Length: 279
Ligand SMILES: C[S@@+](CC[C@H](N)C(=O)[O-])C[C@H]1O[C@@H](n2cnc3c(N)ncnc32)[C@H](O)[C@@H]1O
Image (cartoon, rainbow, N blue to C red):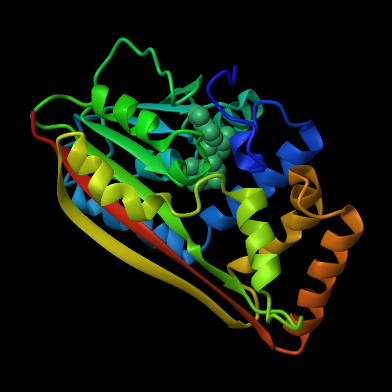
């Protein structure tokens, strides 16, 4: 596994080779993020936009713990068949366990695989990339794979991701947090600007843009969205090699002190794009 996946610092792009402790930190963080109102709303919004009839097939790439596929499977108009794939066997096992605990045992076909080289012998009505594209080594190749697995003429692709270039967490450092923002981007995102290229990349692959929506997460005072992210940083940033354990701990502790004074400030935007495969 991981022959295509480059060795960028991004820990979320190296989940196939990380230790269990680090992967469990990711499970906790992904599940907490999945419960945030912006994530619940964004999945609900693209679910509505798809106007499903209950018979479609859906493939999710980079499913992690299955936050998006599990929520979609619970919709009254859920697709008939859902295949969800991730490069990490540990995260796929966690997804399967969590789905079973929600009464979705056997409902989703969980698979381990690399989105750069899918090799699936099927085409799907919907292909979903929910916060995957900013973590892959080669976004163009992943989009090519995704388009190739869509039903010609009617298949739809849904891409939801952070515009990581917009990520900003204020600190009391002299630069206001610019350097720590840069290190977080480097340590957690291989492709921080990928979402900005999507309209062009999708068009170049014969996809027609159908719908988009932007979501801003802004934690002012207390870190509601950013809290679980901050909790993961003392493990993830040293693992990415961008901060020592001591530096990461100090960084997070300082933000904790700011939060206790209602002085936290963190922002990031997310975007959904739905595009049709026209031919
Ligand atoms: C930020 S997580 C998002 C997980 C999930 N979609 C969510 O939003 O909760 C990125 C996921 O992409 C997976 N991933 C990274 N590179 C991949 C690749 N080349 N093929 C398949 N999955 C990949 C990681 O294992 C991780 O689960």
